[in-house]
Length: 188
Image 1 (cartoon, one colour):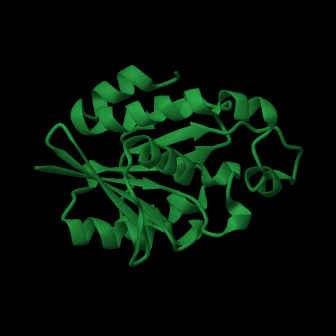
Image 2: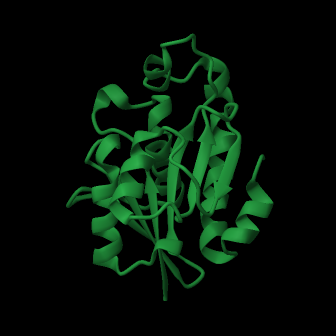
């Protein structure tokens, strides 16, 4: 049975709930609620298992805070014997308009501290990532406040559609492969 590690990046704690930076957690929580999957507290994060079309998806919400996400990713990859091409890191991206999706096989951290730590822990930039656009509606020097800010009404109105799309993307990654997923979902 093929295994995949799907990692939603975010920060633990109520003060971070519903913030743009926690879109990775939000996508996995949505997926889990739609499929009646339950997260359990485990070493370095909350995990859940979802089986679909002969595949096993291990969902991970690291409890290490964003800047140390790599530690949790590396631990669960090793524990579950999952190769780097079968991981998918879900993260927010200020360089994309709200709700835009971009899946890539590799790339830079783009200044994102969670991706920076994953790259450092894995020793490579060659790992699949799913970037969810959160927009860049902030003035100079206000980036941290923006990404740690809550979704606005307009974003919330579009959120369910975007979360459904994200759920389909994750299933596609495990069943149709990375290239087909990129062709189907990029810039949608």
